[in-house]
Length: 221
Image 1 (cartoon, rainbow, N blue to C red):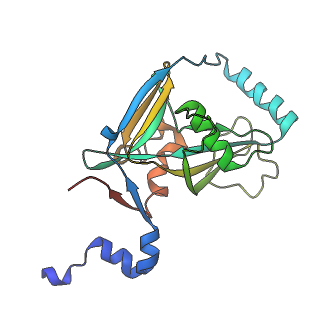
Image 2 (cartoon, helix red, strand yellow):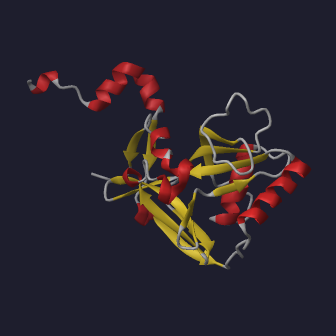
Image 3 (cartoon, helix red, strand yellow):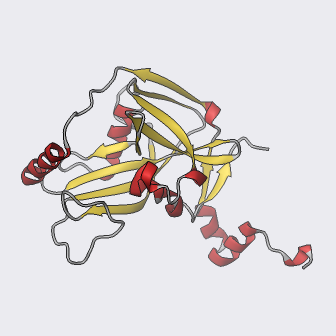
């Protein structure tokens, strides 16, 4: 087959989606060396058994209803490949930056607040520096003891938890300040799929959620 008959993958996407639609799916990511990583005071971990954690969730549900969480998907470039930023606790537990919303708090405001408190504190500490993009997906916990699902089972009328993943666009440079007992790691996106034993069900599904985007790696020749 001649070269003239081979269509570039980008052209395939453009023909399938239309040039204007393809443009909206481009996503800029910047080199890791443009970011500064520092540390601040450690945040105490909640040392509790599984039974204690479930009981705490039951108490919170009785007081506030469903537990709503928001988490950030942030990408950087390293070795010409996209990397996902993950927080690591106790040298073994990986998490996307984010956390639980306050009662009545919007997704965007809550995620900005969590990012400002866990990763970076600006002059006002209000999270205004963070650019939160589209919601990539939603995960549901039907009961206190079950795993999270990427859909809400039709027989579940009162789910106990909902976690939403949002794409957060990073500028070319930023200071990340994390607690001393946490690590902020850049993990190759290609190592995450189907690796739920290491990263958990939500994180291992992130690459598939990002498959519709064309990454534009800024600063690479």
